[in-house]
Length: 297
Image 1 (cartoon, helix red, strand yellow):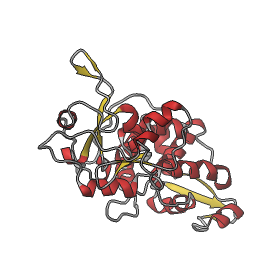
Image 2 (cartoon, rainbow, N blue to C red):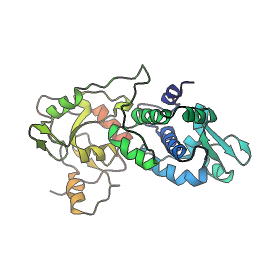
Image 3 (cartoon, helix red, strand yellow):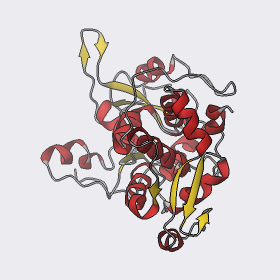
């Protein structure tokens, strides 16, 4: 059985590029638990809080519940659920999962394959990360679920997957004249820029092209905050700051809160700005909550 292909083709709700990382997050969490206890199960009542936190932190802005992937992942053949009544999930109602003692774990065949092939767990985890999350969040997400992975290149496992354009970084940084579009940071060591990155507005994993009008030159801090939904861009190419962001220090106020309503720095004349379709996708699928009012001048 090709477990990598099965993982790459998980059944997910999808419409107009909507994010639905519920099953990938549950699988990453389950793989981390398997690393620590290959025979253990995940009782819903014991892991519900952890899974809800993961969905809140790394899922789409809309409300969601960990009961959804806990039940529906069974249909993909990689997960099983047992209750006090026997084999099978009682449904997606939290109350039913709690009251029946629902316990989930990786399917027996997958557990056996993970034992036979020591590197399979890491390959599955990296595939999940690559397909569903931007690179800026991979390390942080592994820490959040407790996964321990060896540094390695993501293997190209599915022939139909697109290849990234290695020129995008240089094209985007040049378009923004090697300055962070949010704060203007332009640090270099000699002639080499440091701490500047090409951020995809619409994530590459969700059909975002390697085009200049889907990119922003951002410093490392603002790239991470942009991918976490703290920051965004509105229709007038001004910076959005989520009301959910809390920072009381002078640094947080200066480097994040004060950005609200500020116009983007760049791109240079003659270069296409961020396309409305990509900007709108980010606002719907990544940006969290309502934007703060523009900071006072």
